[in-house]
Length: 216
Image (cartoon, rainbow, N blue to C red):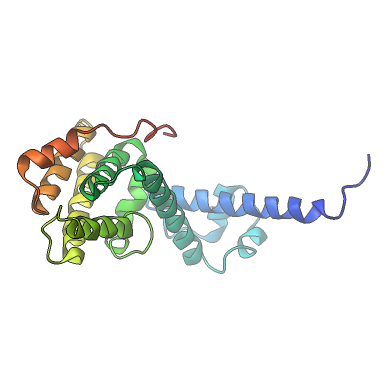
């Protein structure tokens, strides 16, 4: 068998490094979801099925890994919301769709739910994931005359608190209908932002993208 060309070796090495990093991040996400944030690095590498030395090729500390694990969830969630709402012209509907989808995800993607709830207060001020997109949509809604909001940052704080409360309720009450609960809370937030009760209800009755939970 002929040897691989030299140009192929770095590519294989890079792929292996990416797989190792991804395995560490996935293991960290599972541990965060289980509330095991004080585990030693050895336990993390065992969960990832990688060697101890591999850890320090990618991260300087356990804290750096956990931060990367949370960022990975936020980036994936944000990318999903961007993809599923890019066709919507109405900023009020864009906001509502993102809120309704995230509410449903608390039940349908429990590991992500636990990570979001465990880091909830910090995520409200994050520049990744849902928070910056919600703030963007609130401001767009104000500019378009759809929302009557004087302070978008305060509006975001109220909406974020409602969303985290919804997530905890759905986690603690597994028999509650997640779709109905998410839509009810979204309606209340839209009314808080200035929509009439009927209009808020109508917005929350619109169909969600078919591909929303294709990967669940």
